[in-house]
Length: 138
Image (cartoon, rainbow, N blue to C red; front, side):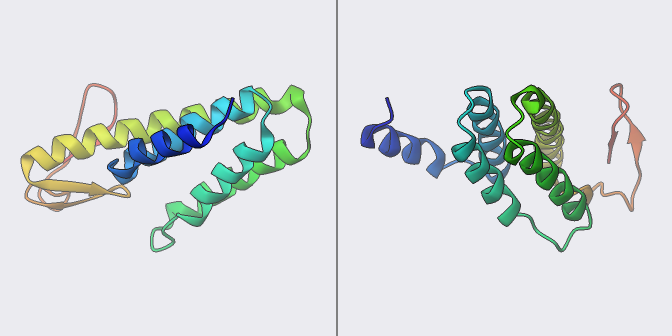
């Protein structure tokens, strides 16, 4: 059962996470809550993710629309559509995990990937190449 001990452990585990790791953790937790039909907690996580979006990047508006769509599914309380919400969140998680791997790769090379843009040595202004997965890296 849920306890104050869980709150303490949960806080300690997330305190030192990177932004992307925390987002991936949040997406995983939202999927778990939707799967357990704990929609109140799932909605809380989705709303917190929405609040954290950085609207200086245009992709944030598309992400907002996806999160609003997911909230609509959850709010409709149609359990048969929960798998759709889980599928969307799982795909978003995979995309963020991939972006985090690219960011780690770029950081080791002296550049940083932020919202699809690279900065630093080897940035997109220098060159771009397609990798074996079909994604692009600089």
